[in-house]
Image 1 (cartoon, rainbow, N blue to C red):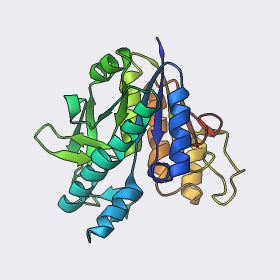
Image 2: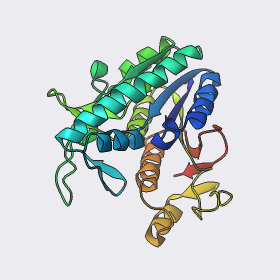
Image 3: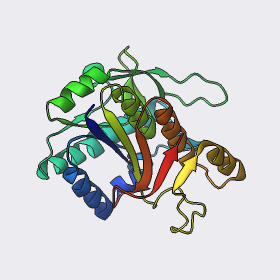
Image 4: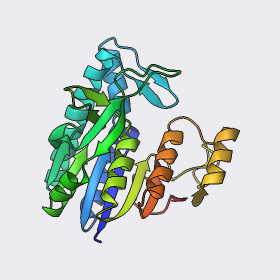
Length: 254
């Protein structure tokens, strides 16, 4: 199978001009098949505040009522996605921006209410890898926004790490997939204030222990959980690293 790089870039990087420029240049220089998945949570929070809409986060995930759904649709599917697509085109990358509703490539169910009502948040039900593969084989570079659809006409806010992991899992049936999560740190850290404390290889048992101890918390928990799910589903390699370079960092070991 042909190699495929799926790069996920977080909102903190998207909103920092220098980091985003470095990341997009590095991404453009990657040879072969590739996909970019982006977040944009900080921009959504800022736009929501400007509109007088409160942002509520629970365990690193955004509670999305009807007003917030409008915000994230505008920010993720419009402002952030099309800005990235335009900049990649300027770097010679034939990029195409997509939400899960476009071509129906990613279908979700609205998350059921258990302890928390997350509102219009989607849990991925199905990914049509054949559609993405056709684009990739046609030398198109998909740029995936963190929005899916329910098949009934509604968009759903969906965690960008989940989008990346689900796309990687589906495409692993057709490609040798390397999934790289890029953010503002050097990797998964033992000490959040010490960039040199990178965990080079993170095993599942160590992850569970570090979460219990509080060393790993917040949005890093769903990121790493998605990484392990991807490994379990046939993704060849998962790395968490800094956006300024697409090497080094933390390798997730199943």
